[in-house]
Length: 72
Ligand code: 9UX
Image (cartoon, rainbow, N blue to C red; front, top):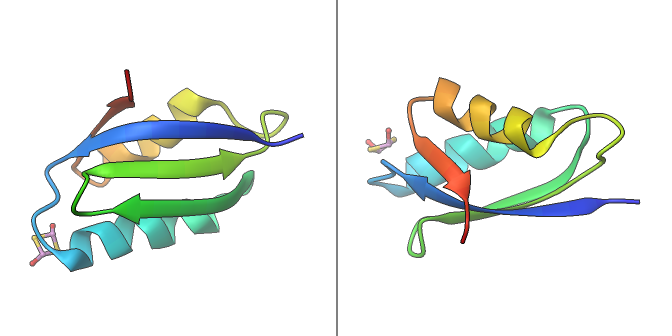
């Protein structure tokens, strides 16, 4: 069963940023589908909790140089 992570992302200033994050996330083993929205500075990621954790997604985004945290 998939879980969904709803994240706030900071540091995106153009559409290439959001596209880059989206592409990287969608390549991760365990991610079913990731959608990154520049306008709302957020990401929605459906993932398999048997293969990865929410923190893995957040850390992957941070590794690209952006801020990421669970939406509250
Ligand atoms: Mo656009 Mo984002 O030139 O790091 S790709 S600002």
